[in-house]
Amino acid sequence: MKILVINCGSSSLKYQVIDMATKNAIGKGLVERIGLAGSVLTHRTKSGAKEVITAEIPDHTVAIKLVLEALVSPHYGTIEDLKEICGVGHRVVHGGEKFSKSVLIDDPVMEALEECVELAPLHNPPNIAGIKACQTMMPGVPQVAVFDTAFHQTMQPKSYIYGLPYEYYQTYGIRKYGFHGTSHKYVSQRAAVLLQRPLSELKLISCHLGNGASICAIRGGKSIETSMGFTPLDGLMMGTRSGALDPAIVTYIMNKENLTVDQMNDFLNKKCGALGVSGISSDFRDIEVAAAQGNARAQLALDIFEHDVRQFIGSYAAVLGGVDGIIFTAGVGENSASMREGICNNLEYIGVDLDIEKNKVRSEEVDVSKPNARCRVLIIPTNEELMIALETNDLIR
Ligand code: ADP
Image (tube, rainbow, N blue to C red; front, top):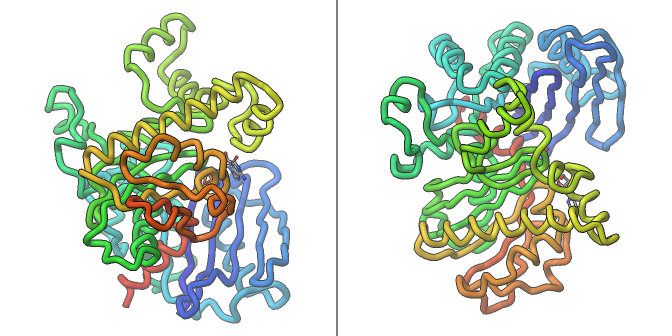
């Protein structure tokens, strides 16, 4: 049983074929510059060998066609026949309030997805284009949509309603949705396995710290609070995104800098965060190197991020009424021992007792707490593709 997982961006497409018997990716790749000059498909085989295919790729349909050809290539392919693909799982960023779990795609679902475009105008259209392309190129193969927002649909109104006139929620759908749900769900399930306790009994705080970063309070396997909001701009300061701000700053900067709405949106998403503070890079590796060399603003960016994460952990401990485990995942969470150590500093009051030596690992699924720590600190590499494949597999069976 093999599942194709597709993640479409506006000009890119990532894919993996996952063998459900072993849960391993047996082929994966990336199409870049769709609709632009210099489009390219980079395919990796099971052994990790790389094949670069340059071609004109004007749209997602052509991209999917090339991916499918690469998958069955006699030279570097992954499978012998496309018939081996039993289903396709699509990452869809925004499911609004319509989708609280993954769904098998049919015509009414496609209509509902179109209605969610307004909430994620940059992300949902390429996701939909990818689904349509697969429907065209792989007729009869079941397609499943897996949403970044679905996991957070268990939040209560007191968590997701903003202090705005209630009509804005009713009319425009303005509320907290939360993102990275597939990742938070996956790592919380793995945490239960690692801790050898039922998920239904656990109070967990999942810290997905990558370029985009969000934190989630999970009780009994359900999201009850999360740091991203109406859009993925909210919450923590991130690589290039500001995170939460006094809302009055937005209009203040627009006035001072004479910015249009679109320019301001671009500014908050692409020029702020760790990049804006450090003035060096949005990449935490570069910032850590600069800070180690004595760059004060790089150090400040790291300090802000660490402080932000610790603040959320503290507030989520209050919301959960205790914490059994803190999970670190994604680029920074999985790889930066110093960031994890910094964040865990001062968390003794909730039972954290980090083993500094054990913590010096990267991308391993491991408990890095001292034996008697009440609140366990776990590193769990996320695997959103596998989670999408598992949900797809469940729905098509
Ligand atoms: P996304 O999927 O949101 O693009 P990732 O989860 O891949 O992001 O995380 C990317 C971030 O992880 C980058 O800022 C990168 O610098 C950071 N990162 C990766 N490895 C390390 C490391 N060893 N130390 C610190 N940061 C790291």
